[in-house]
Structure formats: C-alpha cells, structure tokens
Image 1 (cartoon, helix red, strand yellow):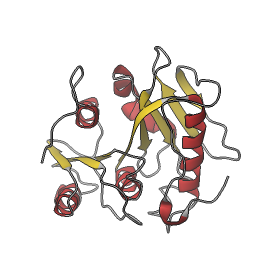
Image 2 (cartoon, helix red, strand yellow; image 1 turned 90 degrees about the vertical axis):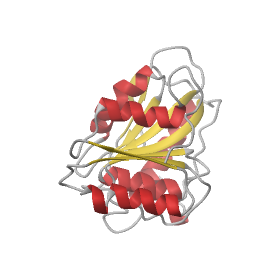
Image 3 (cartoon, one colour; image 1 turned 45 degrees about the vertical axis):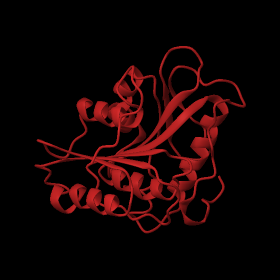
Length: 233
C-alpha cells in the first residue's frame, strides 16, 4: 500500500465506467493486503453508475458498524456504501496525524473504482468519523461533492480544495459531544467560510437513526424522484 499523498489528498477517482470485473451485489470484503479492513455494500439491480457514499465509523467502531448504520437506507436509494476500519481506536487525524487510514481509504477507493461504475461521491461519518469526514472531505472537494456529518466534534482540514456541500446533524441532548460547542459551532464556522451548509438539530442524543440517514441522503441526492434539494441554511 502506497503512503498517502501529502496533505491527505486522495488520488483515487471512481468514474462512470469500471476497469475490471464488476463487484457483485451485497457486501464484499476488499483485499487490500495486510490487516486493513474495507467493506463495500452494493444494492441489487442493474449494473448502472451508482452514487457512492464513503462512511467513517465513530471511535472504537468498525466498517461493519458503518454499514449497519447507513447501509439499509442507502440501499433503498440505490446508493453503494464503502466503509473502512481505522487502524487504531480512532482515525489517524485524531490520533496524531494523517497516515495509514488515508492510505487504506485511497486503496479501497481504487479497488471500488475497478469494479463499480460511480456517478457521484460523498463522504460521511458519525462522531469521530463525522469530524474525520469533514476534515478529510474539505481537503478533497474535487472528489467528494458532499460531506455528511452526524454528531461531529470539529473540522480541522489539512488543506482545502473545491466547495463540497455540507450537511450536519446534531442532537440537542448529546452528552458525548455537546451540540453548542460541536455541531452548532462547526456549522456556523463553515457557513461563515462560504460553504453551503445544511444544519439540522434533533431532539435526541449521540446517535445515527434511519430518519437522519434519510435526511442526509435527501440533502445530497434530493428527495426520491426529484432533483437535488435546494440550498438550506
């Protein structure tokens, strides 16, 4: 596995045609070499270009937990989901600096690009994974058109590229990452920096629910049967 590009910039670029044998419907474990874990879930149906959601788990989580959190709702929208497991208890950016997790994600994206036609790509995550998605996504706006953050703590991009749209949801009773100094503050800061931000607070705690996943996908793709949702603040 090659080292990550400087500044956390991902090199892989999934496109509307794949170069190798198609990935099957269902969940596939990608072989990246070594102990790295990456899972891709592809909905059933014809082999047409699909939206791809890359999703990052919370601290102590796994790729399987990412798929459990968002996979069912994504499948109903025809969205493929790619999830990797962080090398340590949380993502490299939060554990001391970008490194192995970026390399794993880049390798996983390259594998998916070989077997899946991708129409558009978003990066999302929950808790520490939400912070990671915002931070890495802002540095890779040429790859990710939207960033979907569930209960994030912060955004600390190593660089900035493009202008990805941002959706953030945070529970008003979150005792892990309090809303007033986390989601609310992050949304305000990004909007003030000129990003298109959709921010939603919900009556709940530190959680991802099917309703929130639906709202996130609607923000990215537009409601089912309609075009992309309009600008929301």
